[in-house]
Every structure is written in structure tokens, then in C-alpha cells.
Image: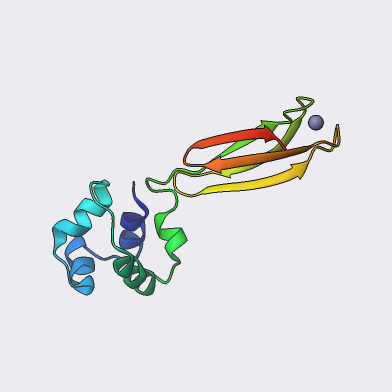
Length: 118
Ligand SMILES: [Zn+2]
């Protein structure tokens, strides 16, 4: 279930009512909620004002499923940190393995995680 629907129901708004406030027709809201379409940024911003939430709260957990994945050191194989991998942005971070003291780089996002020797 999309977050938009969750927020809309929490505010006791019908699809028609939300659409009207955004200057759209009901089918636009229905498409967002079914995942057939995504709202434009200006509509997201308007919804944050209606719902009193952030864009992050609106889009996360809907079709952007974030999962926590752990990685192992590419040098010694010991378990390192867990990273939150979502389906949108890719991030990159590097660190030093607490077990062997060697450096590694982790690239994560878009549902994937990759660790490499630095
Ligand atoms: Zn290591």
C-alpha cells in the first residue's frame, strides 16, 4: 500500500478531495496509489503541506522498498556494517575494517550493494 493512501486515509480525505486540493482529477491520485504513476515534485510538496509530513515520509516504504543489508570485509571476510539499501539513490562510502585494518569502499542503492577493496 502506498504511503500516499495511508496519509490520505489518516487525514480522512477521499481521493476526490485530495485531488481537488491539488487541482487534479481523482484518476491521478488513484494512479499514484496503485503505483501506475508517480506524483510530480510540486504535487509532493503540496501533499507535505496537506499532511504535515516530509517528502521522505511520503515516498519511503511505498514502492521505494528500503532494506538493510550487511557486507563482509573484502580482505578478511569479517562482517562489517549494515547499510540501508533503497531503490532510488546510490551512495558510496569507505571505511577501515576493524578486524584487519584495511580499507574498503561500499557502494549501495538501487537494490544492490557492492563492497570493494580500496
Ligand atoms: Zn578486514
